[in-house]
Each structure stands twice: as structure tokens, then as C-alpha cells.
Length: 138
Image 1 (cartoon, rainbow, N blue to C red):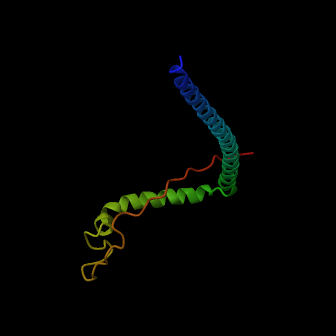
Image 2 (image 1 turned 30 degrees about the vertical axis):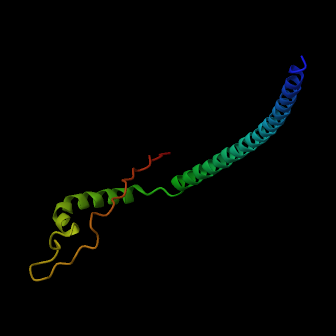
Image 3 (image 1 turned 30 degrees about the horizontal axis):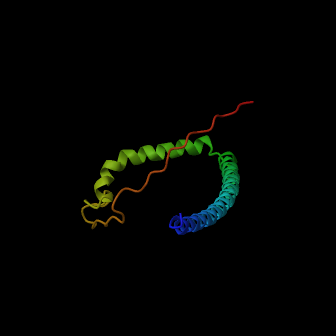
């Protein structure tokens, strides 16, 4: 028994040391858990604030779009003129295509006039066609 007494005390000391380290680790884990909870709460608050801000911005944009759409509607005569213009452009496009792509002379130039160089490489963007608003008759 006398030989086992020093071993027992050594084991008891190791056990107490292990329990002390365990308690420290538990405290650290609890502290980290609390910090994570605080971070999560903060992230939730920030997320809710961002959602509210985005919703508000989206509503503002929708109001602006509605104002722009409802504000000035083109007259039917203007829409008809625009439609005829784009039909004319489509009809004359084959004659202009080589010139616009930089591959041929200007279609309006005669044989005596030197051709101009095209400024752009491709065709210019074409605007989307608009439709006439429904007419309200009283």
C-alpha cells in the first residue's frame, strides 16, 4: 500500500489538473457561445434593416416608374410616325449595311464623290418599339 500512495496522490493531482483545465475550457466555450449569440443577433438586426431599406428603395423605384409611364404618353400621330420611320429604316437597311459595317461606299454618294468611313464597327442599337396607349372615348 505504501508504494501505491504516491501513485494515488500523483493520479489525484493529475485528475484535479484535468478538471481545472476542463473548467477553463468550459468557461471559454461558454464565452465564445455568448459572443456568437451576440453576433447572430447583430446580423439579424442588420439583415432586417437591409431588407427594410431594400423594400423602401424598391417601392420608391416603382413609384418613379409609374410616374414616368403615366406622365407623358406619346400621341398616336407620333407613334405612327415613329413606326413608319422604323419601317423605312428596315427597308433601306440592306443598302446601308455594307457601309455601316465599313465594307463599302456610302449609298447616297454618287460615283464622283469619295465614300466616307463608318464611325462604328457595328450597327447602332435599335430602340424598342412603343405601343400606343388605349384611347379613352367619352
